[in-house]
Image (cartoon, rainbow, N blue to C red; front, side, top):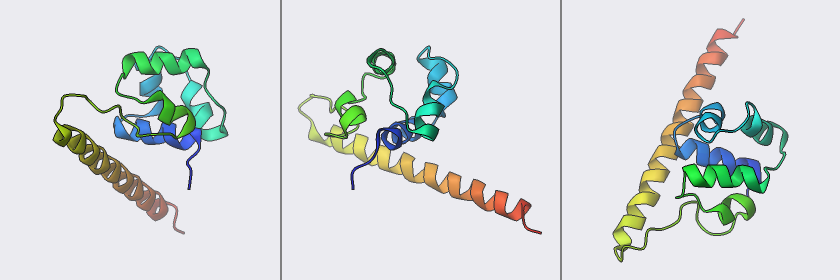
Length: 114
């Protein structure tokens, strides 16, 4: 199943272990720019994507825009184990992020029980 632009953006934000607002600040983007994409499914302009790419050159803009390829640009050091380590690191960070989100949701459910 192909992911949407908004889903891919959220995956990258999770990889960075940050939130949309923090990434906006890092990349000198307007308040709410990324939240609109994630919550309303709007798309980003090329200039905005370039600002993110400038701050995070490891991001594969083809992946972000079209879902093609890998999220991160592989380093061409001749050592394939480095690429594998990046993928494993991302997977671990993403799983931790999801686990954190589950815990937050559990707490919210506990608070809202009658």
